[in-house]
Each structure stands twice: as structure tokens, then as C-alpha cells.
Image (cartoon, rainbow, N blue to C red; front, side):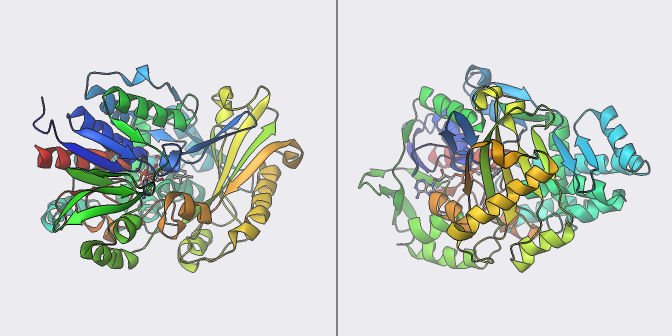
Length: 497
Ligand SMILES: Cc1cc2nc3c(=O)[nH]c(=O)nc-3n(C[C@H](O)[C@H](O)[C@H](O)COP(=O)(O)OP(=O)(O)OC[C@H]3O[C@@H](n4cnc5c(N)ncnc54)[C@H](O)[C@@H]3O)c2cc1C
């Protein structure tokens, strides 16, 4: 029995981080209420059902399933009771406009053949890169991925490892140290984009994603990522937790240096021993804690930080099945460096783009009516602080251009096949998720905004206010926010005991 039993807590937001935290708290005997603004849980992992197609809004690549499994094992349950995970291979097919393609998986023999096909000289370099990735994975993920960085001294302790792995260098720079072929450099560095980072600027520590995928594989949840969230909710409720959907928290109430409870849009209010926010970090301080000096002050400091770009996503259901198009594809455009600069630095909408194409029906036909296919095509775009566009006007034109490109590369008569389609813009990220500047991944994952320099899992001044999710250590991505939940839960359970 936990010492924290008999205490209560509130988690604002039902994203992956919020749900993982809520499960950990409830499993420790803390009566936990999750309050979610939207009609469905999931946050970035929301979903829509239209004309018989299921469209997951966000995450599609599930890595490190062990970090999720742990949430069931805490109480002796088995994740397989609630969720069916299916392996995906190849992990990704990367292709370039000149017709070259590269299949990336953890079948090492096959991977070596793929590298040889692009550049035999890089096989040896790849082995050295693997060794590097294994080192940063051990230091950055296994040792530090789910511990809170509350003081600068915790950062000093990590310094030798950061120095050893030259963490000030970018992922692209480290990959280039080992690999000479430009296409292979792109293939081994693009992963940071999946957590909002520019491969040219994101710390080389993020090369750990390579090892994470190699060891843990890439998985799909049968029925979509939304089923993974549904399974987490089921498990949380089984443990006795309470979900409150469709009611945004408007204020986190404070008394001196403590929070006392929350008040929601519907007028509901509750008193809690502790409150954790899974909402956007700026929204949490500027809006939810806006009545307190602490909220206003920290929001001002956040306004000076750099946020990740946004995304433009075209969801489409089409007639026909496409066994030749793998589950995850990256269609690189003609430019890599220049395109990244347009998105991250210059803040312009480029004429060309690189597309991540999601094709779940090749693994899981249940995502579409029989004989049809579900897709989404995603492109990173600058956030609203850098690029101010009338998305209601630009959106439909851009959606057409994105589909044109998918048509040119893979599905020639795409427009004739569309049964249903819609798109999601930076404006939607702002509106639906209270995402600052419409950022898709919160604070940009650069070294100067990582670990202690990121949002702290427990607020420095309000002793029972906590954060969980992409804005806090270690950062975005399912394993990242589930790791942040472990760090935050450790603090909350300790503080409430
Ligand atoms: C399109 C896309 C694709 C991605 N693909 C992948 C992938 O393949 N693999 C991967 O690992 N990661 C991926 N990511 C990243 C990953 O999805 C996110 O980093 C992660 O899901 C964020 O989780 P979170 O815990 O920070 O919460 P969020 O998902 O941000 O959820 C926060 C929740 O808080 C709620 N909320 C906000 N304000 C309030 C309020 N005032 N009151 C009540 N509720 C509130 C919101 O409605 C939301 O439900 C992707 C992200 C996007 C956008």
C-alpha cells in the first residue's frame, strides 16, 4: 500500500503524457481525475471517423512499447488485455525525386544490403554510427529519459556524458562524421523531425532514436493509435480513476505558493492536493495560472524561447488498395538543408516539400471500408510566430498541391479516387489544443532547451503544481512524454506520501 493513498490529484489534459501520469498516480492509490477540454481523449492522438474511414490525427509510429507496457505492469495487468500491437516492417521507405529508395528496418542483413546499394563505402561508417547511437541511448534515454531535472546540479552531473558524445553537435553533423552519402545522411538524421527538431540543430543526443527503433522496433496499434489511448483510458478507469471530458480547465487556483484546485469552463470546480498540467506549457502558465504572479512571470520567460514548427496534414480516404506502398514513407523533396531553413529559420511556405505519408490500411484494413485505403500526408510548416497565413484560404490550395505530389510520386489518378478528405493546419493546432503559435511539438528540442533548460516536471515556486508532456523533460514523442510522466509521477507520489 502506498503512503500517498487517501490523497487526490488532478491531471489537466488527456494526451499520452497526461494519461500515463494519471495511470501511475491512480496505481499508487492517489484518487486521480483527468480533465480534458475536448470531446475525446488523446490530444495530438485524437481521431476522426468519416465515411467509414478512421483517421488518426497524430502519432502513428509507436516505438519502445516497453515504456507503455510498464503502465499495466504497475498493477500486475497485461497491456495485451486492452491493446493489440502489430510490428511494422520496413519501418520506413525513404524515397527521393530521382527514383532512389531506401528501406529502413532492424533486419541488419537487409539494412546493410540497402546501404551497400546506395554507397558501399558507408557500411563501415554505419556500424560506427550504430555504436555512437547505442552510447547516447544508454546515457540519454535509459539513464536520464525519465528522471526529473529540477536543479542545475543535475545538469552538471550529466555534463561528462554530454561532452563525451559531443552533444553540442547536431544529429546531422554526427551522422555526417560517419556517413558520406548525402541520401544516407538524410535517412539517418530525419528522425528528429518526428519530435519537432531540425536535424541541423537538434543535439546529437537525439541519435538515440535510431537505437530506440533498432532495439524496440516500430509498432502499430490495431485499430489505430486512438485504440492505444482508448486502452490507456480503460486501464485508468479500471483502477478507479475518473475521466471528465469536454470541459476545459480555465483556471488553476492558487493560495500563496500552493495550488488548491481547478475551475472549468462549465463552472465545475474541484479541490486537489496536487495538480499537473498536460496542456501546452505556455497555455498552462499564461492562461491557467494567469491570475498568479508566478504564471505571468514564467509565461514571459517562455515567450522568449524557441518553439517547434507546426504541421500541415492532409487526411484522405481513397478507392483501391495499395499493397506496394508501405505503412510509413518519407517522400524527400529536391532540397533537404534549404527546406529545413525555410521552415525553421526563414519562416516561408516553400514551393517544394518533403512528405511523410501514412498508409495504415496496408497493415490494418479495418481502418477503411473494404477495397479502400486510408492515408495521411504530412508536411512540416513554420509555426504561426514565423509564418502568418490565412489558413482558411491557403489550406485548400496547399492540400491540393500535397495530393498532386503524392499523385506524381505514387498514385497517378489520386484526385479521381478520393472518397473523403480534409486537412489540419497550424490554426487548428492553436484552436483545438491551445498550442502556442500552433506548434505541433511544443518547445524546440535544442540543447539549450533540454533537460534542466526545459519546463520542469515540478514548478520551481508552486510546490504542488507539476507539468507532464512535450513541453517538459525529456520532450515530444510518445516515449518522451511517457518518460516525462514517469519523472512527474515519481515527484508527485513522493510529495503526496
Ligand atoms: C501529426 C503528428 C504526428 C506525430 N507522429 C508521432 C509519431 O509517429 N510517433 C511519436 O512517438 N510521436 C509523434 N508525434 C508527437 C506526439 O504525438 C506528441 O509529442 C505527444 O502525443 C504529445 O503528448 P502530450 O502528453 O504532450 O499531450 P498532447 O497530445 O499535447 O495533449 C494535451 C491535452 O491537453 C488538453 N488540454 C489543453 N488545454 C487544456 C485545458 N485548459 N483544459 C483541459 N484540457 C486541456 C488538450 O486538449 C490535449 O488533449 C506526432 C505529433 C503530431 C502532431
